[in-house]
Length: 146
Image (tube, rainbow, N blue to C red):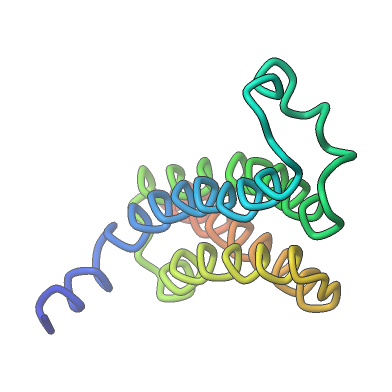
């Protein structure tokens, strides 16, 4: 187990893991949205226009929908940052910490959004965005040093 932990802390594993886990977070954001849709009497007829049922969702379900949409936005910023850092061979400790923190912060973000805790939601959003920014900066620094 210790060998696995050491392997994940060195090289490109944290960056690849961040990319995969961030994609998983997008998929996990469907869980509260699906629960909200089930409470809004989702039927087969709603498959024709699932977004049209937004007004039938409970308040927390609307927030789940917004959180789900924001997960896609965050992923489109974070994925290129991870790829840039991977291609550039980034190994800086701050980049590795940012890579591990991003998916965790995004999971907390979903909970804070659905649970209607705006200060925590904002902190998680900004911190996760900062993590992506760190990966971009470290990737650019590494490319410029080559």
